[in-house]
Image 1: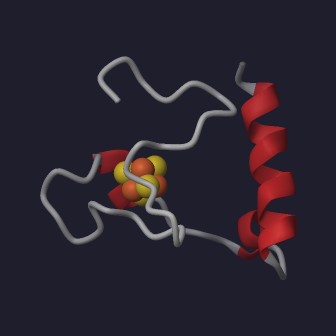
Image 2 (image 1 turned 120 degrees about the horizontal axis):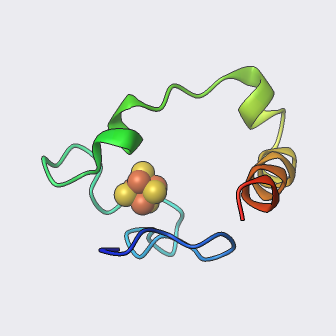
Length: 61
Ligand code: SF4
């Protein structure tokens, strides 16, 4: 995504099964490689993680 990923838009590298198409590849963005998930970020389910992500995206729009 040469102009960055807008809030609310899925990354173009996100596969239909929610895996990263670039995982383990040198083309994977440095930010993604450096991201260290935490319990606060992930919660206990995919739904909780999406709530957290939506909150971050709204805060950075
Ligand atoms: S890890 Fe980065 S490149 Fe991969 S799907 Fe997520 S945002 Fe996109």
